[in-house]
Length: 451
Image (cartoon, rainbow, N blue to C red; front, side, top):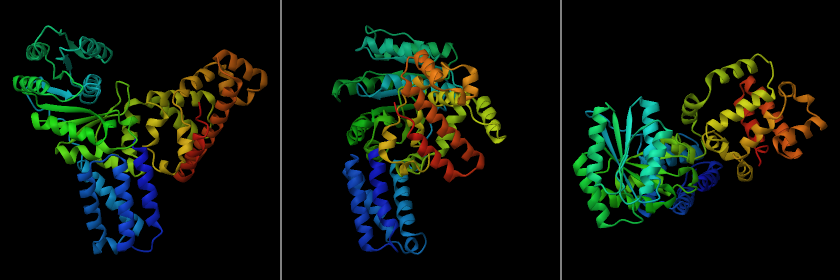
């Protein structure tokens, strides 16, 4: 996420770290590079202008020049401004209403709106124990209604049926009345998207909003459209009383322009960010955590929360106890670790949350291939339990049998054995509790994560 911006900002800020103090000259040079980095990230020009002005004002302050080192001071200023421009802190959904609380979802076609409806429903169900119903008021795309029904069934959400012959207002009102009878806590209403903003679309959604009076009106926008996302959000905000924005497809956004522009241009908070295609790939948007990721500082809080939600705690505790007692780390343990990574969305989804990953060369990051996880697990599954527990047994004829049994090549078996050895070394470093050694182990292990 935001890889291009991260690389540019880190390269820029690294230059000033070697300076003895902040001066007008090195401040100007650094800010010029930061400005270019933001513009290349497709951040809206008014946002960039204000951003640079505030960082410059802070950098010229006497208290900054006499406290931290130049590098620390400038990083802190840029980090603080990134946080401010994205909204200072996460703003939660306001669901204080007589149930069911109604959430209206708006957005252009192709932004991932229908998928986000189901993701948000699942998130509310898992994290806030809400009973959630969903309904599609998109009477122009029969496929959208069927898509939402499928997603609702997969996520165990209540689905209220609708069809293209009905009026959107009638669809929503009927669903809300049915939700009351089922004692649901929340109803999420999906709406029709268009390929572009038009008066007919706006009139329809205004009428729907007035009829159902939602407690939350969220605008769903594709983050990969950059500052256009912010401009589109503003157009919707001019027509509707938006309460927040959901950025989708952020895992594929290497720039970051939308995240850094939306709040400034619309005045509305980014409440959630979509980080993948899976049903649980939706996170609350925390500006301070995103700022840390952008600057390559990691996001351990989000990583810990993700582990707590998705990891098998019993298996994790068992492995931790085993490693701490010096009983070794075998291929069966390694298989469980790969399955846990797969459950959490793969290695790439975790990488930008680890501190220090900005120091890992780009060519190594690019070699990480999460599609390889399933194949690696398949290779280990083709081993006998004795081989998993005693990896040194795996020699020539055994390797050939394992390769054939898993449908892979001999080099794939050799690669996973090499990767296992790297992970084994990293576990030993973790036992010693040395973060520096552990990070070195992670960087080394990336070399083994090739397809």
